[in-house]
Structures are given as C-alpha cells and as structure tokens.
Length: 367
Ligand code: GDP
Image (cartoon, rainbow, N blue to C red; front, side, top):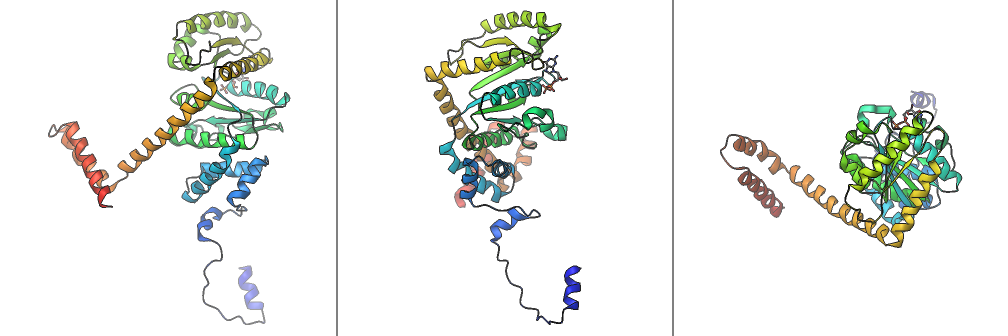
C-alpha cells in the first residue's frame, strides 16, 4: 500500500523492467522464510559456538531440530566442525516418574554445580511432548533459579517426533553444548517408557530418582530401569519423610545386590536427598565424581563412549535402510496386497517378506 502510494506520487516515471532473479542464494531462501534472522556461514556458527555465544548455540540447535532439509544439511556441517571440540564433559542421565521431583532436583543439583564453577547444559528427551504442549521437560519456568544462572543453559525437549529422531537430536545437541564449553550435561527424561533406554545409551552416568514409599515404588519402576542405574537417589528425604527414606535406601541397596554385576565394575550407589532442603545434594555430586574417577581409572569411561558411538553408527544405518525400504513406491504398493494374502493364508509371511525384498532390490538395481 505504502509502496503504491509512493509510486503514484512520484514525479519520476520508472519503466517496469524485466523481473530479475533474486540476488539471494535460493538455497538460503527457505532458511530465511518468514523470519529475518541473520544467516551465518558454517564457520560463523562454529566460531560462535566455540566462543560460547549462547544465541548462536541456540540457533544451531534450532537447525538440528528443524525438519527442513537445508537446515539439516547446515546442522550436519556445524556438528562435524564442532566434533573435535566436543567430548570433554560428563554426561548425566536423570530419570524418575512424574512427580518424583526431577525438575526441583535438577535445579538444586544444577545450582550446586554452577556455584562450584562448572558450566551446565540441561537437555531433555520427551517424545510425548506433543501431548503436554507447553509444559515440556526442560521448560525454563520449572527451573527459575537455574534458568537465570550465567553458568547454566537449559534447552527444552525437541518437539514430538519418533523416539529415535528425538534421541538423535539430543545427541547432536550434546556435541554442540560440549563444543560451547559446557562441562556437565544433564539429559532428563520421564521414567515411564522407552525413552530412558535411549538416554542411557547416550550418557556416562545414569541417575534414577525415586520416592520413599518403597513397596509400590519397587514394583512401579521397571526392573530394567533399576538395572541401568549407576545411582539411585531417594528424593524428598525431608521432614517426616526422613525415616522412610533411609528405610527405602536399605531396601534398594538389598534389591540392587540381587542384580548381576555391572559392566563397569562399579557398584551402584543408593543415597537419600532433598531437592527442597538441598540436604544430600552435594553427596550426589560426589557420587557422580567418584564414578567418573573409577571408570576413568579402569578405562570403562572411554570404552562406554566408544560402544555408544559404534551403536549409533549402526542404528543410523539401520534406520536409513528401513526408511528407504518402506518409502519406496514399489514396496508401498505391494504391502497391502501381500499383507492381505498373508492374512488369507494364501502365502506364508516369509514368502511375502521375500517378495517385498526382491521387488525392492530389483527396483534399486535399475536405478
Ligand atoms: P517432576 O515431575 O519429576 O519434574 O517433579 P517436580 O520437580 O515438578 O516436583 C513434583 C512435586 O514434588 C512438586 O510439588 C515439588 O515441589 C515437590 N518436591 C520436589 N522435590 C521435593 C523434595 O525434595 N521434598 C519435598 N517435600 N517435595 C519435593
């Protein structure tokens, strides 16, 4: 409108020219779409991250989380250049059922760690975040003190997606945070599903938060999750709860004795704490440091990271092959027919599977 008015009022007659192509690289137009964000080169992103520039770190994480192909490509280049600067941290997974006090605990332990001069990044995995919308894990409003601490960086969970996708984004975010100088990484997850296995597979130390009402709790939390724990912290050990908490501590210690020995040789610790009074919080940090010393001493620390890196490589290959297979037009067209044939007992499941695979490979070899 304003533009048109100016045109009409102008005494100068401008000859309409031939439409010129945009001077902006078309690859970058999508990046800019709708937002007037500055676009950095890969090196500028990397430099910003390494210099600890939080705005650039956040923007880079947004690229990791984006589903746009261009963003993904840019993110991969940034990650590759950050890798040599990453790895120098302790990665700590924190899990527990909703209400156990995870965010209060992270705020308490986080403040303690930051006050000791460490730089802490708090990330989260919550593939169900679509359901809870605003109140996703890692939400800054839940950690008021920590979110304003100069030594802390809190990033909410990437928005919902497949667990594999969300886990991958968090793993890549860890690399950027480490390159930005964060020496302690928390990865928080809700202790109700598969996400703790994904978190366990990306951290050095796995902490399970529990409550004192042991009987129910022991059954409520899956045995598999307890087996993954390097330490169990019984939270809310304050006020009238203190006695129950120490009783629970003894029970969990006994329960852990029944589990097979851990690969690291580390005997999982059980401790009580109160995220409220902050009693016992320092002890949890000491346990984590003891674990680090112990596993660095027997080389397990690096071995575990190597095993994790190898697993991620194969997982990525497996996921890509699977995606490619099921997204192939030939396969997608055949599936409903073969599926019905199997259900009607016309062919066996194996024959149907083989026909799908044959069709897929034949199609690929033509390409
Ligand atoms: P999350 O769902 O696991 O993140 O748990 P929250 O941190 O949101 O805490 C759940 C509830 O437990 C909140 O009302 C907290 O105030 C309370 N809470 C957390 N930690 C403690 C603690 O150490 N002692 C007591 N008494 N209450 C706590």
